Image (cartoon, rainbow, N blue to C red):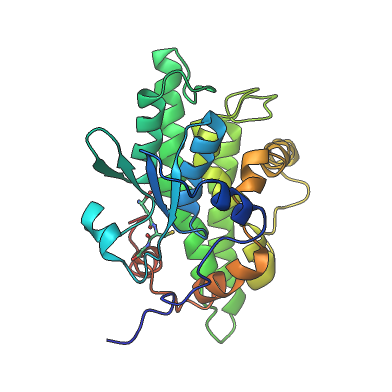
Length: 273
Ligand SMILES: N[C@@H](CCC(=O)N[C@@H](CS)C(=O)NCC(=O)O)C(=O)O
């Protein structure tokens, strides 16, 4: 079998993320098996940082899966956590986020509202990110223009579909914010933030994101307020590596040669793996 195209991706975090990784090398009961480049990992990494939960960061390449990862998670995806006393595995980024919320109630901020209705409503928009926004992000990024007269139409359809999902999500935000539920950052923010700070990939590879000027101005204004708050957040900066190291990975998505489970799922019309 040919080697996985991402088997030899850049092996470690860089920039500010490298500094953070270095601070989290010592043995801790809670272990995060992570890939520095992975947006699903970044969801969990953000939560650990925001809440100040002690953890050990363990870099693994999920495209060249080590036994240590497979022993915890037979699918070999990151993020995977090893939970202490007794040591047990946990995976699936949104499940991990809910676990951290429940298992560390004294670690602030709390990421879900107290009120049961508001909690449930937050979960609708958390789910919307994974079930709608991320698949359409990938359909747009992996779209290959055919030759011929409607070469751009398909790409534009993919772009519009993605923008429409962002718009629907944005319309559900607290009117002033700056975050989804208001003044403080919460789970809906954390689940989308890693993709929001990767939107440069559309400028780099797909001719731009194409947020329209004019119609829906106030919705896109609200989107920009949210994005500014996310981009300025310390935990986001601290968990982000140098752009140059993401480039070859995202180029493989953009030319649709990536072989990750997510890339394959997108090609065959399935959702997030
Ligand atoms: N549903 C999973 C998705 C995790 C995921 O797809 N992680 C990628 C890296 S960003 C991975 O481990 N890919 C390995 C593979 O595709 O074999 C979650 O939310 O944690």
